[in-house]
Image (cartoon, rainbow, N blue to C red):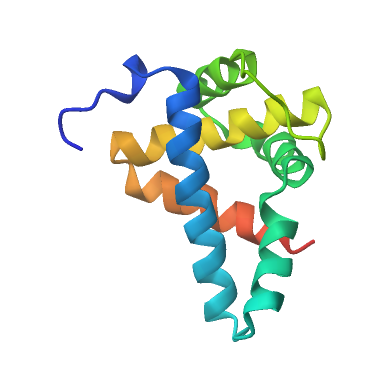
Length: 128
């Protein structure tokens, strides 16, 4: 991904990548925690990845974000998606898109340390 400039990608493209990166982090975390039954893995993962949970995570992270990260979040929050899920309101959906946008941005930027820091905080907060 050396030739990709994440700052030049549309916010929804960043969120698309961020969704996959976060989902993998959550699934890895749950398997590492000792859960092995697929139904339970799925049920637990949903607690982390649904729009309302991601919106809450974003609100809790906002105090530690850099100006650059805040700008990425703003882009993600303002992105116009062609649909919203039935299980989430528009505000939560936009906030969750902003969270995924941040994760995608950090991943594509190659900022592994910051990505791991944000993911660790998100996984810790997701348990609460």
